[in-house]
Picture 1: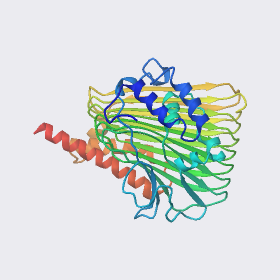
Picture 2: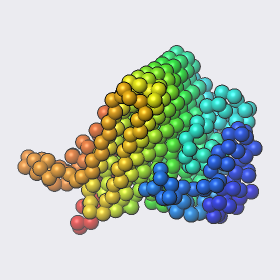
Picture 3: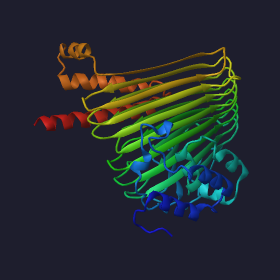
Picture 4: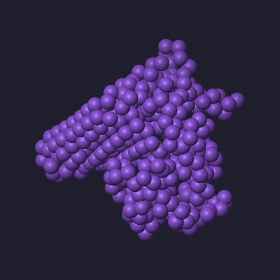
Length: 429
């Protein structure tokens, strides 16, 4: 067993794999570890991790969490699936008030039972070392099955919690049946200093399935390290509309791996990232069009203040068979201070000859003319700037279909701006 003290990365991860390699999905774990171990944690030498040095950030591995998944119903009547902590209102593996057409099971139970459907869908190939490490060391999570044709009105919330100074490797799997419709919410509780989280969500969309996915990754304290991966497999004519909010705090990398394997699949990914002080946030997307008539839209807004660093990497790949693909990728960044840094790297890789694809990236400061216009109408400078910043960030939320969810995310943006304004006033005093 591992001690409660922090250990060097290679030794700690190898010891943890030794504990978990026989805990279900043995072949999946072994293949993932074999892919990860020769390279180890990614550093700037890895092209896809060039702007984020995870090896340096995890120079020591915190002791692992020993908690499991639990299920409960929250006050908003969302099915709330809590992973790795929180108040245990039900026994691990139990289910409370799931709507008709939804089955929920702990990942640990599914792995122990060697459920063939779970094993087949659980570990899509991404080629990413953080995802491989997650697959090798995953301890628990939730498996959510949505029946074919089910129209789930109540959002399903997947919540991860973690204590300070603890590491966790969790994975959730959502299998959406043919013609089903659902809303998946992904919440990460605010991480305290020293917490290290490597979490993955795998979504498998059946033919004609439609999913609204909203991820809220705010807030974290300086000194925490977070890697959130989303892997989505698209069936024919399926749709995933995914929006994420990141409000900084330590080092965070959010990466998306989308495979549009079915014809006429539609993928929409958008997000707003707000950074200050010495925050570091990296959003990386790899979207693969593998079948004809696919549609993808990527729209991201990044606001960087203080000495923070923002990263956007997006790559859309169109296979030869994916004729009639329609793809647009856009990243815009707003720098609020002289010490702010933004790295933009959009890419297209096209092997088909009948496509409509484009990408764009911009990086700049607030328009002085717009600030002057608002000040000329009586607004103080700080209020004028906050109004423009809020409008810029909210551009990333326009694709959220649910008004209540969009307002919830917008409210958190307003809270971040309010804290920034308050900190600015204190520095002046």
